[in-house]
Image (cartoon, rainbow, N blue to C red; front, side):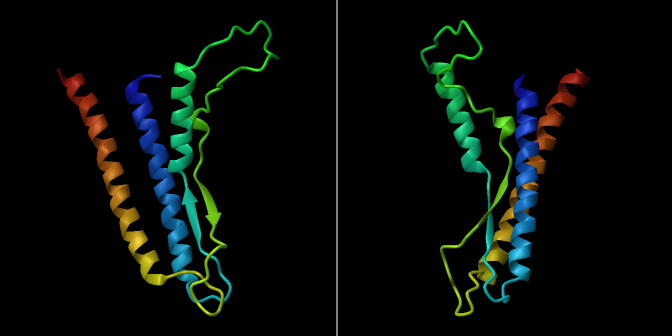
Length: 138
């Protein structure tokens, strides 16, 4: 996979994660007064880092020859394309007496941050394609 394709794929995945994160934060904000509601977050970047670390580790690792596909391989890399953003419930905190752990102000700030991040990702995607357009025009 070339660098352009990988960059666009990563930007697309990051935009999908930001979109899900926006939906989750909006849902949290809308249920900030519901008794016993637990807020959710989205986990994506840490899993993506784990996948990149495993690719690096597999690239630098000692390679053994496998004579049969059933043999166990060392340092099988975790493909970043298998990483999907996922919702995680926060059961560990309780911010209010009714058991709800959503802070409306924090969620509103999260929504603003997600919007800015999404705009930045869109600008980066636009920049990647503008570079290709510049090359094709010459």
